[in-house]
Length: 74
Image (tube, rainbow, N blue to C red; front, side):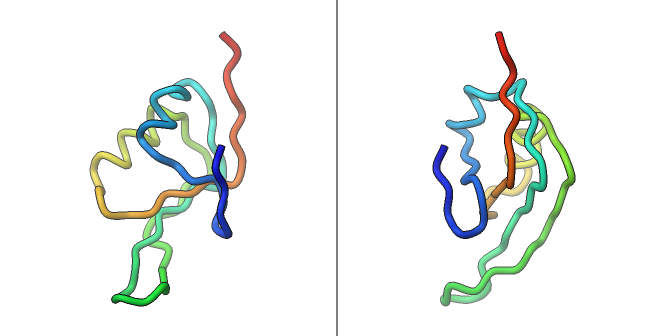
């Protein structure tokens, strides 16, 4: 999984393979202006991949990051 300075980069494509996984310390960042500044708009202690995907669909323009992921075993 790709990481940057904010954590694990969450994308819809990545979540489609991790719907049953658990993500922790999730944050949704909003860009401020044209610079590189961002602000935390949403924060969640823990969500499943399915719950995270649902939240992402309701807010298209945010940058989503998580600190940890616990993959489900199938």
